[in-house]
Length: 311
Image 1 (tube, rainbow, N blue to C red):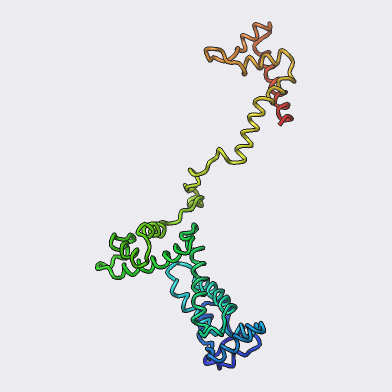
Image 2: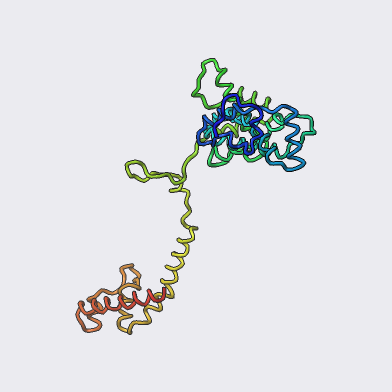
């Protein structure tokens, strides 16, 4: 349902007040509709708050939320500099608004707009910290406070600089001292957070380039293949086949075939020259070198079959 300009306050009494606001798919229409929704008077706010708090009236809660959607839009604009979609910021802010409505106590003597401001910002902050970087830059409450204040103050330093160098990303010693004093934190904490903010994200396993060449990323040198489960299993299997498996394969051969294989492939002389040659074995058994080669080939086939069955 489209919202008409200048809609009367009684529009909030519709059975389905959410029909007043279009979905976030059309962001401009959503923001326009949110700003046209009428505000509640203090008396209406008190009435709806008590209805929801005392009788769990969801329609009353919906009216409280709708009348403050423009607040979420306004707050979300303050965080557009983080490169995140405006629609997502609004959605997270709306979650915070609904949490505020759920916890709001009309007997506290404050307006919902003042109470909801904290919850809206808190939800947007949480979203930014989770999605601005692949790796979290702030995990504790003091770090989160420093994250947002530091970024804001840094922008102020840039705009106030004499040369207006917008490309300057590092802080001077004086700026670090001023930030630490203003934010009541240690210089080291300011430097550490500034380092986190200045660092870029690096893909561990980058996608191939447009020309089809494989891109080189940290995954190429950070991977410890020696402890990779599949590699460990394969290494273990190779060790077993080289010991117990090989012994079992040799047992399927007759004495002559076994000695030929051992002499040709499994023995190393002191001079590291390897085992006996085909001609040496041929002279020992009184056959041709070609015959020794045929016996060797047949023995290898039997051993290969035996090893496959053993594995």
